Length: 396
Ligand SMILES: Cc1ncc(COP(=O)(O)O)c(C=O)c1O
Image 1: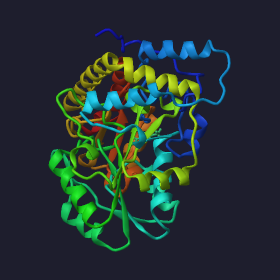
Image 2: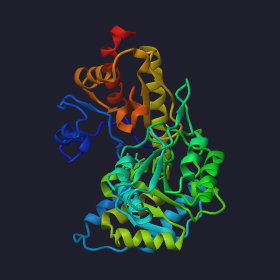
Image 3: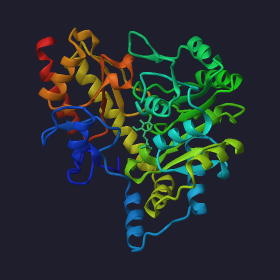
Image 4: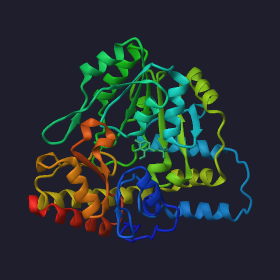
């Protein structure tokens, strides 16, 4: 590996939500305790340094000394098209690409552009909480097609329930998360085709949040839904460099909208968005020159996930934890400990002083779970695991 991800980069005093965010974290009621000794493994934000090509591109942009309104050059679009063709064998036309400053922003815009108050929107809980917020804060009706979990912690889709919800006349949209946060599932071609067919038949638009699509286990394949179906007119896909290259702070999401009509509606609702010159330079650098780094980071994450799984199997054998197919998120099931979610929280957050995310944030299906994000140097993850295990020693 060319990149050294064991290096601990100090992120304190860098405006980091994860490492400097005590005030917001307490306001969000994630925990009462947040201090210099807290290990934050709660946010999908890597503590691993980005590709050197990106650092160089940003330096070059800084050296221009003027950072005015910027346009998207041909190179920007080519970089996106080449990346998705090469990595996912997906042909994207240039005109289908719409820049948005964020995926959550794009999802909110889609809800406003394509649905009316009281319309139904399907999501699959337990799921990334901003999906719920986008539906509820816009006064739409939430339809939960809960994923079904087996004994091994593997999640699958209840298609009968999905179809029943899609058939309701007021159902207008399905917000899909693939790879799925927090369960780590990557939906397979047969599942995606079935979801797409049900939605097409019932005029339900699919908003596919695929921003974890590049960060999957080395032995897995990810299929963009718009690529594998014959007709993609009812699909809009959110792609981003944010997760893949750890640049959430540069705000760069590209929404792929094949339908001309849907694209115009989206742009009218959102208004034309310009990106900063740093964002434009970053996208071109990472999509053109970041592939080697991504392969290294995937290998590092695979190793860390294996380490976490082996640690828990040995030290906390009651805990149910599966290797996620995609994402760097692990979904820990504490239900076999026989203690309340509040006590699990207290032991991890207040006593071990490790900051995770309570599963209840992802819907009631997550109540007995904790979400841990592991894209940090292994020494940090290891220390967090040891602190947690110590607080559960009496329950082994
Ligand atoms: C599934 C999913 N969508 C969207 C986001 C946030 O994306 P953005 O920062 O582009 O709004 C996250 C961040 O964790 C995520 O996991």
